[in-house]
Length: 365
Ligand code: FAD
Image 1 (tube, rainbow, N blue to C red):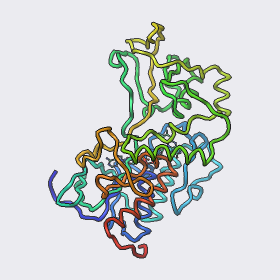
Image 2 (tube, helix red, strand yellow):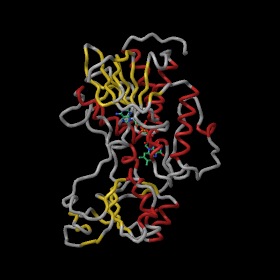
Image 3 (cartoon, rainbow, N blue to C red):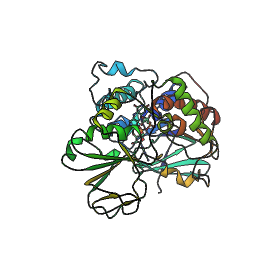
Image 4 (spheres, protein in one colour):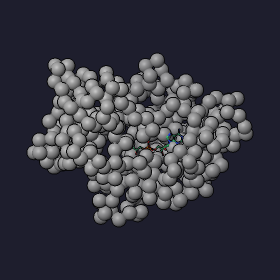
């Protein structure tokens, strides 16, 4: 792309939890929103990926959404309303947040590539270009659903969809649904769909449900494991994948209904079902892949940040800084891929990147 690029010190790419936390801390340290730093987001409205979540994901069924720094979620919503959709409540909160701190998010603006240009970083978008000295990338995972390759995937005549396409269980009434995956989303959707129709649940490994509630110490241990990986240049596994599953009243109820019977992965997909290596067959109308997401980082490809292993070696206090190119921070990636992690990482990235670029810290605007 050519044309004049708007100059700024730092571009923040993405305005979910990670991008907003970063922007808040840049502003608090004295960079002026819209001039010293610019936030770009491709989504139509405030809320990050939360605006796209399925309607039955309510404030009572999410794990926990941590407050962004400086403004409490509870101030923007009646927290007694636990049935309210996350896809409604979080965008409302983020919109109020952007306003409260005057973060001036430019949207919808999709970053298509970031490349080196005369010692600066050129941020190319579908709405013009920006030239920055550093970037904080906070693009999450929602744009990059992952579906593993199994033989016969193209042969299947039924419907295949990924977690991100799910809206409501009712649309599957009368159909047999095969649900693939062992994460929290797989189990929540299995719970809902098995309430209206017949299901088969398949996972690669036998899921282990542990008793007792999830403690802060469990959380820290899980984050440390992911951090260790990215500091060694390995691709991150999701924080949730290492925290494991807990027995909850909802899980007990599923067990009692007999829907938590897990089968190993099938070996192939046929035109009308799935077949295991031993020849067993299950007819299916729908295959729902709850097989997770990958980090949405394709626009950074020109910077060649990846190692041969496919990972990106991270450094810095909370492992947000890219070792190969310290002008680039990744927030909401690896160990900070949770709402609480994204908060902390935004603070660390803002401080370190401003320090690296030699930007003076001034009184907030
Ligand atoms: P996002 O919220 O995905 O924001 C990224 C933003 O970047 C989006 O607005 C996107 O449009 C934009 N973007 C992407 N690519 C580009 C581009 N090229 N150019 C411009 N903009 C771009 N975590 C918890 O802590 N608690 C929970 O209860 C919880 N529940 C979850 C439930 C589900 C179903 C899923 C999938 C995840 C859940 N998580 C939860 C994890 C959660 O997604 C993260 O913790 C956090 O919300 C992610 O924030 P983020 O800012 O990194 O990404």
